[in-house]
Length: 282
Image 1 (cartoon, helix red, strand yellow):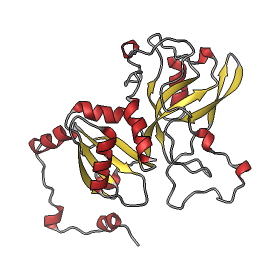
Image 2 (cartoon, one colour; image 1 turned 90 degrees about the horizontal axis):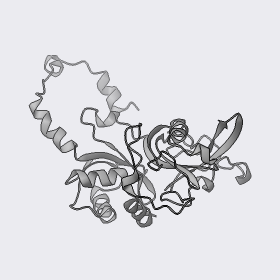
Image 3 (spheres, one colour; image 1 turned 60 degrees about the vertical axis):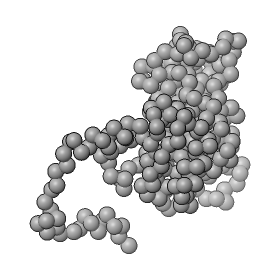
Image 4 (cartoon, rainbow, N blue to C red; image 1 turned 30 degrees about the vertical axis):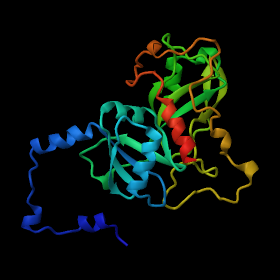
């Protein structure tokens, strides 16, 4: 059966239907002003979830200064409007969020793209690069490795652009339809090294194909595959959902953070709310 938008594309419009209606700029400003305090979101679940349940549950998780309002725009799609920018920034920086184990994808407000053409196939995740030599824990190294996965939003390093610790944390915008990267091979002074990757707050993904979002035809890898032959597993989940463990006893201070050349800075995201979300939603 044809999808409804494919039927619309084949319409032969009459004169009244084909005459364009000009929308004045003044009528758009109010929408954009409200959109500045809003995020567009989708819960990645096959089961339809009601707005009231989502709104009341997330209010307990986020504990905002004032309640946020949810507008239901489609199946599990919501526009969330916050009372102020501080609340919005707190939720945005605390990503990823989950609703009872299902990823709650959030993206910046877009008032120009029709909802049926919006993509919710990308999400921000904290990625940990393990087994790095100390010389490979710089801001530049983090950005280079992160770009091999997706769009780098943050690299957790200190004010001197060095991130010594048990692993290097990079916040990356990932394509959820691609198999999760299990690691990266890097070359340092001519020596190739395998760098394992772990993902923080990684609740749901296919251990057959490594994808968070499946294609319409389903997982391309046979479910009957022997566990010893599987290419993905729970070892992709990071043990810690917080900032990296320190080699030194230095205490991290937000005043030490400097802006990153990638545009969003290196300061830590607000972790407390995100941890609460996982505890409540599991």
